[in-house]
Image (cartoon, rainbow, N blue to C red; front, side, top):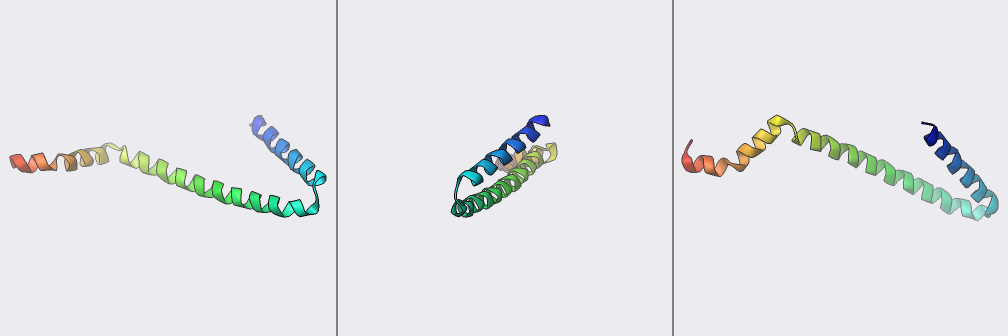
Length: 81
């Protein structure tokens, strides 16, 4: 947990130094890039959660048995069993 807090303060200090060293016009692109990166992060996390949920649901025993039954359906029909 402490490394996470240290990384946060490191990020804030780098941003403060960049703002202090640059002109006021540099703040606009920095804000736009920050906003866009946050939107990409949100979409990525949402997609990752959905894929993890989908993977866990397809690995359940009931679903895997159902999938194997469907894949063997042609041989079941061929032998009429």
